[in-house]
Length: 92
Ligand code: SF4
Ligand code: SF4
Image (cartoon, rainbow, N blue to C red; front, side, top):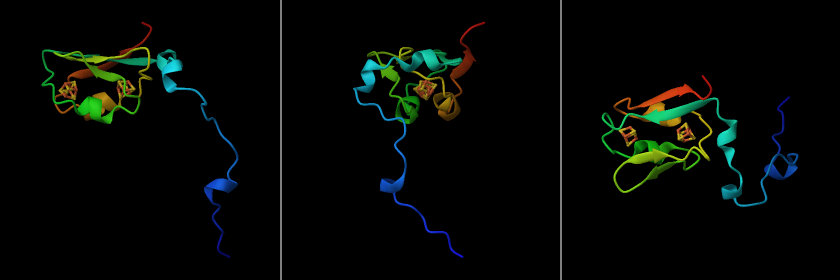
């Protein structure tokens, strides 16, 4: 017997924020933090493109991480083509 799939309107309400995400400093969730080696970085901006939290910023000269919002997922380190980003323990 084929199971009937439910539509999104049938799903229970989950965690939905009702304010601007700027008001939630999610950096406190992090256990690992990305650290960028600017000597290796080629400024290709792929980390900026892939970061799901828009926590990679450009300061006019270098890429920098906004630790107020970075959740430490490690996607930027995974995608960096020259391995310029290390994920290091937040508390060590
Ligand atoms: S992906 Fe790597 S090389 Fe590219 S801007 Fe980010 S840190 Fe630099
Ligand atoms: S670790 Fe995740 S959230 Fe933090 S800067 Fe990298 S991609 Fe963005």
